[in-house]
Structure formats: structure tokens, C-alpha cells
Image (cartoon, rainbow, N blue to C red; front, side, top):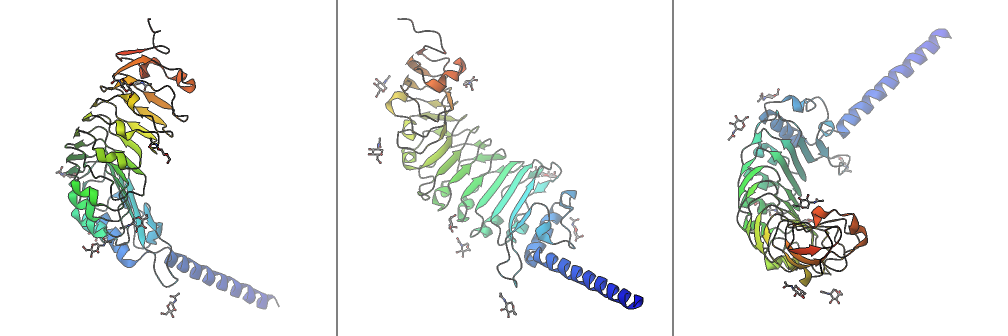
Length: 345
Ligand SMILES: *[C@@H]1O[C@H](CO)[C@@H](O)[C@H](O)[C@H]1NC(C)=O
Ligand SMILES: *[C@@H]1O[C@H](CO)[C@@H](O)[C@H](O)[C@H]1NC(C)=O
Ligand SMILES: *[C@@H]1O[C@H](CO)[C@@H](O)[C@H](O)[C@H]1NC(C)=O
Ligand SMILES: *[C@@H]1O[C@H](CO)[C@@H](O)[C@H](O)[C@H]1NC(C)=O
Ligand SMILES: *[C@@H]1O[C@H](CO)[C@@H](O)[C@H](O)[C@H]1NC(C)=O
Ligand SMILES: *[C@@H]1O[C@H](CO)[C@@H](O)[C@H](O)[C@H]1NC(C)=O
Ligand SMILES: *[C@@H]1O[C@H](CO)[C@@H](O)[C@H](O)[C@H]1NC(C)=O
Ligand SMILES: *[C@@H]1O[C@H](CO)[C@@H](O)[C@H](O)[C@H]1NC(C)=O
């Protein structure tokens, strides 16, 4: 009796161990990626000299479990999972150029993010255009990447979101970007961008809300009149050398939420155009803007700075705007009334 129950017990243990092994193998397979994707990731790792950043990227672990790698769900029990996202970030020791050829071997890649990698340098590699049909989001922020904003980026027709801020990019915004059917988010802020704004930017993606961030560059010229037809939610052109009229970005029917024109040489009559009803933030300080402040402000406006312009008249009492300090209205030609000193009649 005793020995047979022991045998039974042992048999149960053996079966349990076997089942666990099968389950583990299944989990491993379930979390493994397409072999081509795995090879591409290992090539990226090798291109960075197998840096310790990639310690979790080892052959004997399923690549969908590697840090900074995102896989899709397997299309069927028979298919392997594809790598659709890679995010490399916050490591000052990763150095050298972007391994474009290795990245382009991730042929299902939808998002590529490189954030705060100051040692990564070189130009934006043309190989990325091989991801033309899949790559919807490209973000390269705070790296040592230099050179132009390459015109060939427009070949990545899937691209909807392009953020290349705080790098060492220089030269103009390539006119080819106007051809991109899906581009609705463009951030080139904190670079050395020169030249003028392409008039037809975002004109192809007319259905979507547009986001444009160009602050802290050296962009010159005027805001193209064509921008009046774009459905902007956010425009940040601050700290450039833009001039002329930009009032057509405003208007009661616009969906604009955030406008920052500060630190340029814009010159227009603020009272000539009603503010968008949904405006949340209006920063126009350090320009040459004139006219009166509007009598009423959009309900949701929570930031306003009109200082260092040529505005005149009384600061209307706006309810919630009472909380804005004098620095938001200071240094105008003729503005007066709380929070500025009272008007002299
Ligand atoms: C990275 O490691 C792989 C596998 O061990 C090796 O084949 C490759 O040569 C290494 N690359 C570098 C740059 O050391
Ligand atoms: C999986 O592959 C087997 C053998 O090739 C095939 O018979 C089966 O239909 C496939 N199943 C799916 C869901 O694709
Ligand atoms: C890019 O970074 C590598 C590694 O730090 C360095 O050796 C190389 O000189 C840099 N190249 C340029 C053009 O800055
Ligand atoms: C991507 O590029 C290839 C090669 O140039 C081309 O054949 C293909 O049509 C492009 N796909 C898309 C979606 O643009
Ligand atoms: C543009 O984006 C939409 C929605 O995100 C997507 O369905 C479409 O395939 C994209 N177009 C291209 C050319 O990739
Ligand atoms: C705003 O839209 C309404 C209705 O869509 C229209 O009647 C009105 O003329 C528009 N106003 C302006 C200033 O475009
Ligand atoms: C600004 O526009 C308003 C409204 O159109 C007008 O009454 C005012 O005279 C203009 N101010 C200047 C300085 O042109
Ligand atoms: C408003 O803008 C001026 C000039 O750019 C700046 O000095 C001031 O601090 C700003 N005020 C607030 C509250 O941000």
C-alpha cells in the first residue's frame, strides 16, 4: 500500500514537472518574436558594442520580454509575434551612429523612440525609409544627432508623428514634408532650424488635428497664409525670428488650444481677430503686437502672457484672469488697470 501510493505520488510529481516544462516552453514560444526581428535586435545591440544597456537582450530569453521591446499579438497560433516598438532611452553611455540598417530589418516596426541618448550621433539614416509602410511614430529627442532634417523622411508615408527635438539638426524644414499624407504632429524644437515655414505643411492630412512645435530655432519669414486652413490644436513658434501677421491663426471657429508666438517679431492687431473659443493657453510676449485686449476671454483660458508688446487700453477684468500677475501684461505701450497700475484719465 505504502509503496504504491509513493509511486502514485511520484508519478503525479513527474507529470506536474512535465506539464510545467511544457507550459514554460509554450510561454517561451508565445513571447518569442519572429526570428528575423530577433536577429535585427541583436544586430542593433552589436552595433552599440553589446553595451550593458542591452543586458536583457540575450538569445536564451524570449525577445518579446526584452526591455524596451514591444511585440504585437500573434496573428494566429502558428505565427510568431512581430516587434512593433523599440524605445531606447536615458543612457549617456550608448554612443555612435544610429544603426539604421539593423533597425530597418525590423520590418513590422511601428514606433521608434530614442530619448536622451547624448552619445548617439551621426545623421538620421536613410535606411529608415525602408519602414515606409509601417513606421507611424519616430521620436529622436536629446541625442547628438546632427545634420539636416532629411527630405527623404517624406518617403515614410505611414509617419503621423515626427518628433526630433533637442538634437543638433540644422538647415531648413524640407519642403518634401508637405507631401506626407499622415503627418499631423511635427516637433523640431530646440535645434538650429533655419529658413522659412513650408506653406503647404499639413495640407495633405487635412482631416486630422495638427501639432507644430518649432520653438528655439532660427526660423525666419512669415507664417504662411495657408496655415489658416489647417486644423491646428497646438502651434509653438516661440524663440525664432518670425515676423508679420499671424492673427489668422486665431478666429472664433478655430479648434486651436495652445498658441505660443513669444520671442519673435510678430506685428499685428490683436483686437482684429476673436480668440478661439477653446483656447487654453495664449503666449504672445516679446513681439510687436498692438491693439486692445479682447473684452472677454475663452472660458478655459488658463495661461495668458501678452507682456513686452505695444498693446493699449484697459486690462478688462476677466474673472479667472485676475490671478495672472503683472508680468503677464507688463511692458506694453498703453495697457493699464489691474494688475497693472490704474489708468490715468
Ligand atoms: C556582440 O555579441 C555577439 C554575440 O556574442 C557577437 O557575435 C558580436 O560580435 C558582438 N559585437 C560586438 C561589437 O562586440
Ligand atoms: C497552423 O498550421 C497547421 C499546419 O501547417 C495548419 O493545419 C493549421 O490550419 C494552422 N492554423 C492556423 C490557425 O493557421
Ligand atoms: C560619434 O560618437 C563616437 C563615440 O563617442 C565618437 O567616436 C565619434 O567621434 C562621434 N562622431 C562625431 C562625428 O561626432
Ligand atoms: C514603400 O516603398 C516601397 C519601395 O520603394 C514601395 O514599393 C512601396 O509601395 C512603399 N509603400 C508605401 C506604403 O508607401
Ligand atoms: C495613416 O494613418 C491611418 C490611421 O492612423 C492609417 O489607417 C493609414 O494606413 C495611414 N496611412 C498610411 C499611408 O500609412
Ligand atoms: C463659425 O461657424 C459658424 C457655423 O459653423 C458660421 O455660421 C460662422 O460664420 C463662422 N464664423 C466665422 C467667423 O468663421
Ligand atoms: C485694431 O482693430 C480694431 C478692430 O478691428 C480697430 O478698431 C482698431 O482701430 C485697430 N487698431 C489699430 C491700432 O490698428
Ligand atoms: C511673461 O512673459 C515675460 C516675458 O517673456 C516673462 O518675463 C514673464 O515671466 C512671463 N510671466 C509669466 C507669469 O509667465
